[in-house]
Length: 121
Image (cartoon, rainbow, N blue to C red):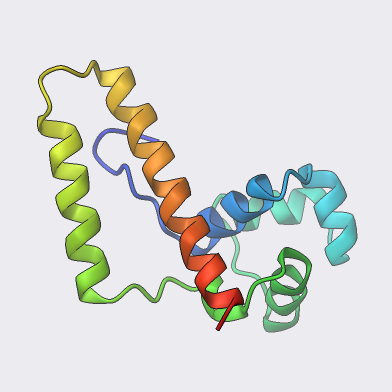
């Protein structure tokens, strides 16, 4: 994750984050979904787009709706996330490493909250 793009919200990144939050190793998750490890790696790295069926299998095994894996943030979501990123970047009391770490924690929390909200309706 670079300082220039601390909010990578591609489908692959969302899939990777949800898999990591579920604490499932890549090879194990690929096997659960019925695809190869290299194919899952390519999806997570944005090199390949999954077919509709593979995307449905991924969502099912992550326990999230397919729509949660597709970046459907509203303008308000984007504005608030941008504001938080700007605050983190502007804090003179943080080192570059601390900024990156804080941003990663923030993104993980926001993603987790979205998934929990979607799961509860």
